[in-house]
Structure formats: C-alpha cells, structure tokens
Amino acid sequence: KKLAGLELHSSLCGRPLIRRTIRGRDCFVDLGAMGSLTSIEEEPTDAIPPESRDAITVEVHCSHNGQCVSFTEHRGHPVSAEWTGSQLHEAVEAQTRVHRECQRLMFRGREIESSCTVRSVMGCDPKALPGRRIKLYLKVDRERFPQKLGPFSIHDVPLKARDFDLPQVAEECRRCGFYWDMSRKVLDGYGLQSRTTNITGQVSPLHPVTCDPARWGQCGIPANARDFVWSYPVEHWQSVESDAYSLDTWACIEDGAAATKSFLSVGGFVYFDSKSEVAGVTTIGQAIEGDAGGLHFAEPRTWLPEWTASLAEQGRIQTCNIKAFRDMGAELCLWLRPNEVIEAADGNPLSQQPEVPHGGFVYLFHNDMLCTEKAVVALDRYFAVLPGPTAVDDSKEGQRGSAPTPKLFRPFALTDGDLFPLASYSGMPGSSFMMTDCPESTGGSFAMSTPTYSTPGSAGSSRWATPNSHFFPLNSP
Image (tube, rainbow, N blue to C red; front, side, top):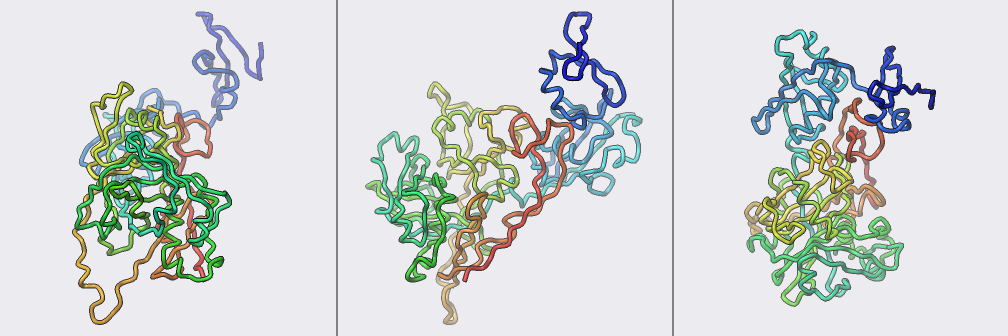
C-alpha cells in the first residue's frame, strides 16, 4: 500500500518497513525504530548525516586543563570525513564542556573554519591513514562567559525597610526562601513606573553574612547586617519603566533610581538585621576596569543533574534575564547560599555537594531543568563566589584637593522589555551599557541534529549558533 507517498513493505520478521529513496538509492527503514509516518516525513533530508561505514577517531588536546579527549561519534552519528567544523565544535563541546563559541580548534597551524570539512582540513581522506585518526588542539577563550563569570560591580539601592511588604520570617522561610511585595506608589518615589498595581519578588533562603568584615564597605553590606538573601528579578520586571522626567528633581537619580531598576530586573542582595528587618539592599552591574570591589568568582565547575531536582521543588530555579548570558545559551539560573547542602527526596544530603563556601550562581543551558542527557547538560555549571581582593585604602581618594572618584554604574542589558535601565554617573544619567556586554559571535549549526528551531539548548536537539547582535545605547539627556 502507499501511505503519504511512501510504500509500506513487510520484512521477513513481519515488522513494517518503509521504502524511501535517499541520495538516489532505495532504502528500507524500520518503521518501528523510526516512529510514526509523520515524524519521518517531517525529517529534512539535509539532517541525515553523511554515510560512513567506518568512523574516524578525533583526539582533542585541551589547552585549559592539559587533558586529552577522544570520540568517534556524537549523539549516535559517527565521525566522517565530511563532518564540518561546526559539527566538530558541537561534539567537542559535549566532550569537554567548553562552549563552542569559546573554542578554537587548531590543525596544521591554522584554525578550523566552521564550513571546512575534515577531509579538506587534512588534505586527504582520513580513512586512508593507518590510524584513521585526526588530532586537534583546542584553544579556549577563558575570559568569556560561560568560561568565566564576572567580576560584578556592587551598587547600593536606596530601597528602605518600609518599601517592602514582607511575611513573618519563620524557620520555613529561612530554609526555602519567601516572597515580598512592593506597591506602585513606592516605585513612583524612585522615578519608576509600573503598569501593575504591585510587584512581587522571590528571595533565596536566608543565611548569615560570610563576607570578611574588612570588605563590608566595598560590598555595600550595612554595619548592622546579620543575614542576607538573593532577590530574583520581580514577576513583572518588563512592566517597570524608567521615567526620570516624571520627577520634580533629579536628586532621586543621584540616590539610585538606576540601581533600583536593576534590582527589580536583574536581582540583588537584601540584608536583614537581628530583628529580621531590611537593613540594606544592593544590586549588581558590569565591572569597571580597576575596580577592586564587587563580586569575584572561581572558575566554572560542573553542575550535576541530580542537584537540580531538589532545588526545582522549591521553585528556586529562575529564568536568566541577562542578554549576554542568554545569547550564549544560558536559559535558567539559580543562587546557591553559602555552604548549600542539597538533599535527596528522603531528606538526607546527597553524596556529592557543590563547593560554595560564600555562595555562588548556577547556570543551566536548557529549558527542561530535569533533563539528564549528557549532550544537553554538558554546559551546566556553577561559579563559586571568591572572598575577593583586599579592601582598597580609601585614604588615597581625594588627594591633591580633587573630589572622590565618581562611581560609574553600568547595568546589564536585558532580554526583553527595557534593554537599557537608566544608568547614572556621579548622580547624572548617562550611557547605560558597555559594548562588551554582548560579544560578537559566529558559527554554524550542526547539520546532523534534529530539525532547527529557535530555542537554544532544548533537550534532544542541538543548540544553534548565536546570531550576531550589538546594541547601541542612546545617551539620556
């Protein structure tokens, strides 16, 4: 019979087979193995890998850790002479956990281009070589996310205890976190407008402050702080808009309207005193060259899939809003409190734990947070907060009769809504965003993977290369 233009046959064992013509040859495909007729018809012919009876071995020598990895296939597709540089980058990403945009694959003294095939790079058919092997050298850009995080600058937010509507901070709130509310009237007082009557934010579990007291001033930690939390972006952060012209004076900007907007859209730390009342609020921004303060992070470490389930149960895994990170495929993020202990379903600690003595940030590169497929979770990682550099000697500021050096606040560009929160420089509005916030990226897709779609990093498919994108902020009056 002919169904949907395909001929249905029966094998000797009685299983249904589909007759298809692929590259000019008649092939019989096991319908039971391939799935439904719909899935076969929707599969583009260009997604079928080049046929190869014998796989080629790829050896990769890594510059960042001195290790060597080798592979002959990726997600069920054997390495062939027709593999392109883009396909090699994706396979190397799964093997080494180095983001493809941070890779430079070298062979014969030159970098492998995305469109070049293994055959063209080698200058011969690798199957003719005795070892059927190609040895590559991997150079890693260790100054770019997600191979590096931060440092972040820290800025005071002028929000006060009276601005927050907090619940009674009970023991359960300390263990799992809680939510706070803020009215639209409060935002009006800081030069911000909201299209909703109130906004809601979620915070992480409380933990005692672990920062060295010598650095409290650098990090904006109040002298009476005892505990702190990380406050995630508010529920309706896209509806909060900067409206400096609605103010009678620009003094509110000097007091931190830009920092308030950043706190609501990117997040920040909230500090509590011994009475569990808000003692101070800070937010993060892009670091300024020469700034010794702020948050510094260790090198990325592997995030294990089994750690995710317990934290997802508490609703602590949030969508990543920072555009530069989303452009590199980071979909979800999470704050780990200092010395976080992750428990199994029975309440006992898991055998392995993340090492975060001062807390840290987690980034997941897929939307299905419970996915465990190796190729999909390869980039999942966490960055532990470092104690930070020694405090700067403030007595050197203002020498020779000059005023103290003004502090420039550069917020992060966001993925939606107001891309450039109003920035301030010594109390005056200005350009809000460094061009380096969205690094240019190039690269191709992995042709062997499932059909293309727009969401990067989803389970069961390739993350397609990040499109080039730059934003040119306008200077505010």
